[in-house]
Amino acid sequence: VAFVQAPRVRILQPETPWPVVASGRPDGVPDAMNDDLRIFACNSNRPLAAEICGHLGLALSPLEISRFSNDNLHVQIQENVRERDVFVVQSFTEPVSDHVMELLITLDALRSASARRVTAVIPYFSYARSDKKDAPRISITGRLVADMLQTAGANRVLTMDLHSDQVHGFFSVPVDHLTAIPTLARHFKTRLDTSRMVAVVLVNADRSRASAGNCSLACFKAAAAPVCALVALSWAAAI
Image 1: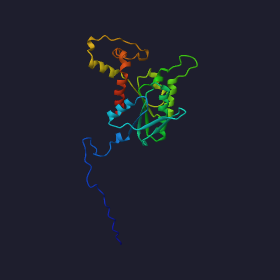
Image 2: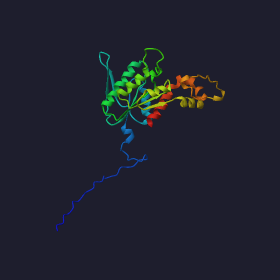
Image 3: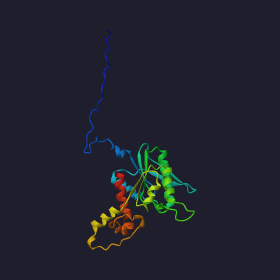
Image 4: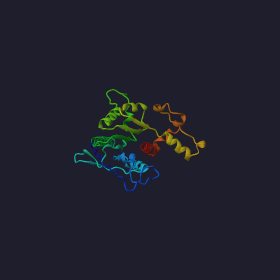
């Protein structure tokens, strides 16, 4: 009977273990969530995107948007997004057509770059008012824009205070529909003596199910919407 000696196996250990910090992960090892997260901004609201990145402790990822001599847009993603979770911040403000095209081309570029998931963050969805066929031979443009976002490569949409709840149903991808009303109510409650206030109640047919307390603050919505969008979107992105 011949006995064969088994080969020796040497297990390599690091000379010095990783020091563990308060977060529970080794110091020097990138946080898995933040390492997978990328935030880009088109030209409509870069300060908002920078503020969101500040809350998350991330740098705004580089994105180049330029124009050819024939006025065609050119978008180039200047960072590796392969298998990353990507957010693109872009409002449909003036010039609306340019901002819509910027977002669509950016979404398509991210999909081509093999991003794992792409979320379009649209604080102001301007075409949401075109949500029904109230005249002959017209387009329901809200539905058209929703279809274009999905076709371009959006896996998810994050927006705020759509004109009506039915616009939510235009999308075939998941939609996070946020509202600024609680933030507005908290803002005025903490800064004003509401017991001595006279509020003007604005009745909105699209928000008929809102409570009387919410409706009483609707008159402040237009002025404070940018601040509320910043707070709400920063919170949502952090989740």
